[in-house]
Length: 263
Image (tube, rainbow, N blue to C red; front, side):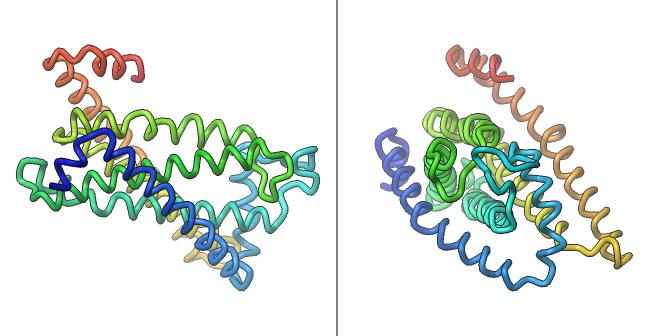
């Protein structure tokens, strides 16, 4: 019953909106809790500098400017670090109910597994909707207490979130049974979660005073590189090409040419 309903555009859109509302009331308190923990963390002074460097890579200013008159403050860095953790947790929560379908395949999965997969994808879609709106306010509201630079909005809002916003419901409606979709969707979420969580932990290590922390830091770098190479090269290219070939076999020109252009 629920599975049949989730095959419709209206019910998927409704679920995505409900998930967006859930994220809207849960993410901010969670991030405040993380920021409060950072106030007491003995390792935070070590993590501040690499966090600030990461922020500058995403468009935050190295020196004070009009949008950031005090530059990247310690509190702003704590908020960014907390946001990074919350994104990782959200990605992991969305991917978890999708795992059974990835493991057993669509045909061998029970109705509950199929519903769980669909709800996992729609939970991620809801997060994209929520965070895109939040980013928009933070970027274009000049008086917002937690401003976001336009570069970060372009990277996360326009280049990242739009992938889910544009593809999740169409793929759910037309290709939800394809293993390439399952493989790509789950690995996208888990790879991002694992890499950024590992990176967040990496910032806490005392690499200058403790040799074991230095070795662990290097190991984490290799771990992140391994995940990136495994997903982007070994998984995603074959999956994308395989699904594109299947679309061509089905004579689905709309999806086929869209996939060709996006590649």
